[in-house]
Length: 229
Image (cartoon, helix red, strand yellow):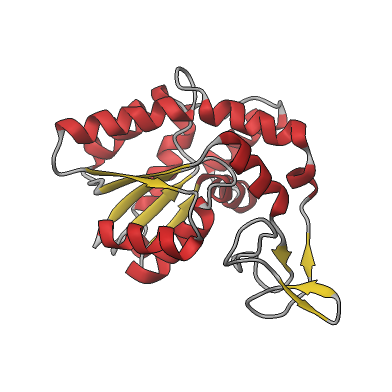
């Protein structure tokens, strides 16, 4: 089972991705982590990517896509994978789709978690990170995953660990910058989503799943698992 997942920052994409990963025993491949691993490991693609990153430039597709394909061919991806964080525009969507086809890698599902921009912004600002595991969902603005309070201190709802706030989650300018890219229906990620939605309409072997990200986490995950199963 091979899955591509989309959703604006704050939509719960990371939380739902973790649920899917565990439920179906597939590997989570995140583009940002992939860059860091290749750079740290000193791979040829990592060295090339670092040159662009150090200059503050976007890493071109001819480096990013081979890096992704190499990762998807690893043994831990043989039972399936969930790709998160790429593509971010329609050109990348087209290039990725063609590269997967040439590599003989089938894409089974494309998931879009939809959420309006204002709600997404509030959810980002409400995120709290657990010191023991960043995958423990805690958000002061989302019913069902609100942190616990013990002795007047807000703690992780899963393990009771201390919570912290990411500085960029409280930076409105940084949040808006990320959302401008995502919600751009012409040149941004929303256009990449439409690319795959149109592709699924023409190719019945590919299923496009659009989810409302507004409800509680468990409700969204129930619908998502039902659609995938």
